Length: 252
Image (cartoon, rainbow, N blue to C red; front, side, top):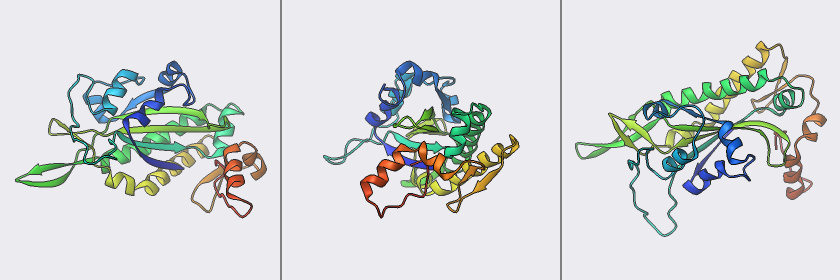
């Protein structure tokens, strides 16, 4: 499964706060930079909080401002980027985190990067002014902070990765705000690319899988009862919605 959410600088900084699963040090250890844009400004390895915060607020690590748009109205919210979250099927999380098959975690991360590569190559773009007219140009580079987590807020096993796509991309040596229209419109495709790649990797490791009607899959052998037992958040949603509620995804 994959979800997308446009975030403000303040929301983005929560990835470095203790209440968001990890302490600051643990958050750093479970993070990594991704993207050709990150490479262009020398960002690699673990995500450093100072550089991440600067980028969220529209500045490169060297202090250069690349986002200077002033507020347009009283309720204007600055767009820091997009939280693109990839969540493994519940059975994959359980096989990894309860039964200890760490190969599945690597499979998850590789599937995430496969989807992110497609996103970067096909949909990274901005708008530039040429001869007095604004036009869309494709840049092929992103700055992405990846944050890897292994539990939900209810502490159920839920392996997932937040890919925080910063609102910045480079075109002909100059940095611009990222155009997010196509990225948001391709959520279903990008989520399916992740699911398909993960399914291939899981089968290569010797597991059998069962396809679900919603296009997702589970590892064969896990019962619906087992999946629901480690999905407290799902139970909370159903309880709040009432007895006639439905929830097709066991991760929730």
